[in-house]
Amino acid sequence: MKRISYLFLLVFLTSILASSCSSTKTYAELLNDEKALIKDYLSRNNIEVVSTFPTDTPWVKNGKNVYVLTSSGLYFHMVNPGDVTNMDTIVLKNTIVPRFKQYTLAVVADTISNWSTIDYAYPSNFTYGDLTQSCKAFHEAVSYMKRNETEALLIVPSSIGFSTELTSVTPMAYDLKIKFQK
Image (cartoon, rainbow, N blue to C red; front, top):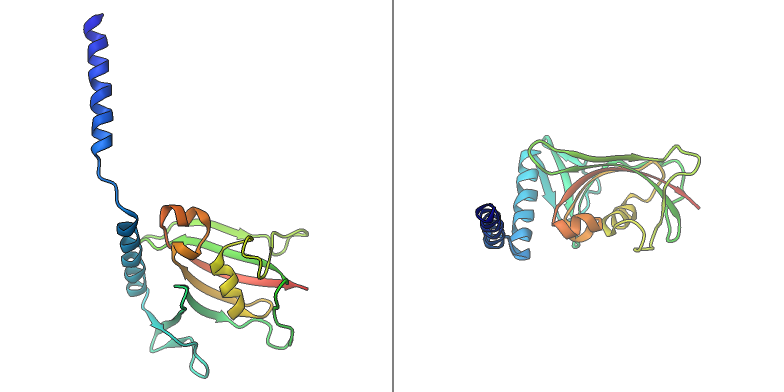
């Protein structure tokens, strides 16, 4: 019986020692991995990155999707400018009702969530400008989207994404559509 106890103790101590010696990445290394993953995603998906918003040129140029890289690190691509016949635009404190599909930037993307309460009687929403609601990237994207029914594609680094991505240093991509209520 004593030998079995010693054997279990030896296995337990060995597993603790092995787990404490395993190499974990530093935050700086995780950020470098995130940048490399975003760069690879851009390349794999034939995305051209620009620093200014297209005006008279389309969001697709020479077969490549054009994404604007903003100063915060958000990659933004307008898919549909929304209801351009209505002159109402989003202002601070409007209630925004998002519909989004969230997925990873992996070679075979995993859809994390497909969240759509846009047509519910009591949809999920956030107040535009209140950064305690939703993530910083969504607020910034809404500032570019401006109208009802606007659709955009986003690549969001962890630093401006939801808190779960921030703690795991995981960039995400989103298909985002919005409605707003005054």
